[in-house]
Each structure stands twice: as structure tokens, then as C-alpha cells.
Image 1 (cartoon, helix red, strand yellow):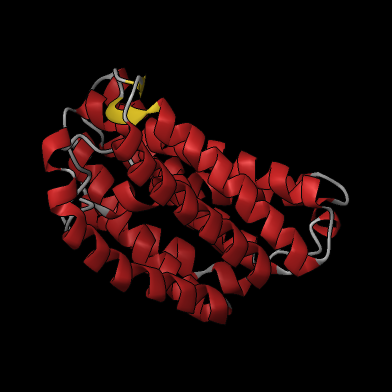
Image 2 (cartoon, one colour):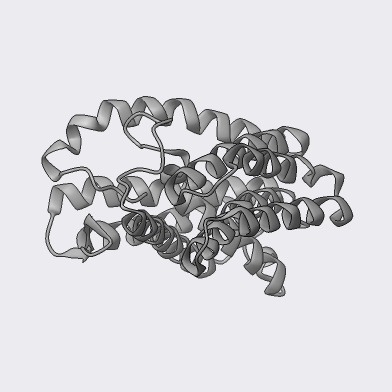
Length: 272
């Protein structure tokens, strides 16, 4: 989660951050636990809000039309019919490209926003509803992302030190990034104990999840910097917008779904 809040104000916003987390996390866990139409409904809501936020950041016209298409795209997932889902995505991409303000950069930004938002909601749904043990996979991966975020936040502020990528996210430190990776490796070890599978595979997976989550955070921070905005929105006190909150999870959902689909035996090696 990219954050441009001045360092001296970071802990002053902690109560608001915790309050938002106590609301958002149970909702996300409940939707993932139930799966199916419940998860699709949550993804539809997320897709709608995130598309609005992207349009506001990038000044893409027709935000509500694109947001509705984002919601419909996610809501169609349980139908398991690409003949329905893909045309919705194509319609949203076409509308964004055609309606964007004149100029190559504005059209790229508009089109990329559709791909970016739609991929994140599709990645989360596939992670939960894939041919592997989706509920466990999604819950593990989500918990690892949250552990990575928390470790980077608290250890980074407690230890301080050199900045990770000051040009993109000036409050992120190497100490926080390294702590996040270590914490996720430890989480992987305990996940392996629970699933009675190879600890090395789970620990490597935990490390990969932390790296991908942090890369997703930094990527979204870079996007905000280029659009000259501090937050993607204001829907979550202490966090900013929904895009600010789920950038790392979105990246992990996409990467995790691809890995589980593409790497033979990966899910089995995790006990999933």
C-alpha cells in the first residue's frame, strides 16, 4: 500500500487504519470463505469502486459507465461462461479507449486502468475458485499479504534506515521490506506444518508473496505519483482509496492464480 503521508503523522493515523481494517478484513474473509456468488458480489463491488477511483485519478471520462461494467464483469464470474464475461471486458476497454481525452498517454492510461482493475478482481476470484483447494489457497495468500503489510509498516517505522524506493514511495524502507519477507517466510513454515507439506516450498512461496505484494504496492505508488495524487480515493479512513488497500493483494492474486494454473504440481506441493 503506497503511502505518502509525512512520517511524523503516520502513527497518528493508526487508529483510523485499524478501524478500517477491522471492517474490511472480516468482509473480505467472509466473501472468500463463502465463495461463489458471494465472492462475485464482493468482487463486483470492489471492481465498481476501484474503477471509479481509477477514472478519478486518470481523468478518464464516463466513470460510472466503466464502473458498472467493472461490476458486471465480476458479477458474471460464477456463470463460468467466457462468452458473457469477455465481451463485458472488451466493451469496457473499448469505451475507455474511445472516450479518453485525445492523446496517446491519456488513452493508454484509460485502457490500462480497465486491464489493471479487471485483472485484480478476476485474479482473486480465480484464486478462490480454481481447481485446487481454493478456499485454503485464498485465505493463506491473503493472510500472508496482510502479514507482509503489517511487518513492513511496523518494522519499517521502528527500525527506519535507508529508503527502499524514495522516488516512488518515500516512506518505505529496506528494513520494513526485509522484515516483511522474513515474516512471510515464517508464516510459510507454519502453513507447511498445518498442511503437512514441504516447509521449503511454503517458505519460498511466502517470500514470493511478500515480494510480489510489495512490488504491487510500489507500482501503485508510482502510478499515483505520475497522476500527482496522494491517495486513489477517500473511502477508507487512514488508507485512502480501495486501490490503495488492495494493490498488493491484487498483484498476489493475479500472480498466484497464474502460478497455480501454470506450474504442474505446485498446488499439490503446497498441500492444496
